[in-house]
Amino acid sequence: MSTIDTPTNAAQPALVLHDSFIELPARERARALLDPGTFRELLGPFDRIESPWLPLQGIVCQADDGCVIARGTIDGEPAVVAAIESAFQGGSIGEVSGSKIAAALELALRDCERGKIIRPVVLFETGGVRLQEANLGLAVIAEMQAAIVALRRHVPVVGVISGMVGCFGGMSLAAALCSYLVVTKQGRLGMNGPEVIEQEAGIDELDASDRRHVWQLIGGEQRALTGFADALVEDDPAALRAAVQNAFAQGIPAAHRSEQVDAYLERLARMDPANVTPDTMRHVFHASASIPSSKEQV
Ligand code: COA
Image (cartoon, rainbow, N blue to C red; front, side, top):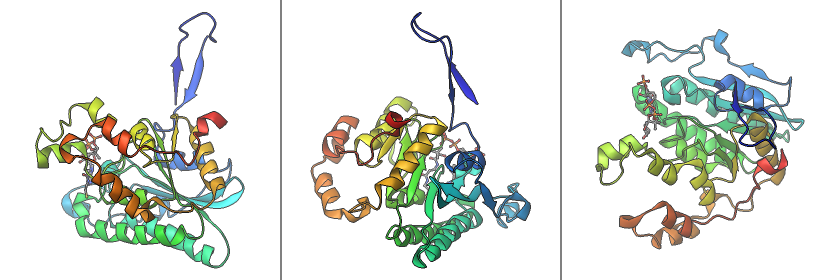
């Protein structure tokens, strides 16, 4: 799918076509990140590995449980991509979808331990634990997190939050464990969704209907400027693909974000919880981006 920019002055070309990454379904997002012609799906819809729990609650399940696992290559190197389908149950993670991701990461880990490096990418587009599967979702997210931590000793684990749902709940912690996070302006990253915060803590804490403020706090641009994400790229398949390739080219970071506990505690101590604004967050958490924006390289 494409959007069309019309010219604002005569010096510009008549039409500029942009492909959109975030308008793609999960399967096509995974395909877009892999080298052309290398996409091969594992446990696809025809395997019908579905949630046993949703029909019991009157919910129609999806044949892939809203999660696509694909093998292929990235920059010629073997890779596995897990892509969450935000259009199914808000990308929430249930027993089956979560197990597919955890198992894919564990298989990559097994290969890495045997000396065959597999490049892992997770496309986070998720409201977190699927509420209808509660503890089962929590358990598989814990497995996923353990696999990410084990895997990142061998190879960078790259996460992508491109939009429109964003990445929330336990999956935000999984994203935070990744070696590198690639985001777009349309992506959001937070522990709780804005509506959840407003409902639990009141509108004085956060007005979820104030979309501008929400994006200024947890949007992709803010997350990149505060160092919680490493590359901010345009909503464009080529830009995202280049950013993922660039992340792997950086190699394993000297210290992962989640290993820098003291540095983050020190920054938190400098913040006044009663007066958190987008500006104070940027001031305290100012990032020195570890991956240059791939936009410049495309
Ligand atoms: N479990 C089950 N369903 C979920 C879900 C979850 N964790 N997160 C989102 N969904 C569903 C919504 O119920 C909705 O379903 P519907 O279309 O049948 O009504 C659909 O996904 C889209 O969500 P919606 O809230 O309409 O979209 P949004 O773009 O306005 O907001 C979120 C997306 C993710 C910000 C919002 O759904 C949210 O805050 N979810 C909870 C996030 C959270 O705090 N998770 C912590 C759980 S541990």
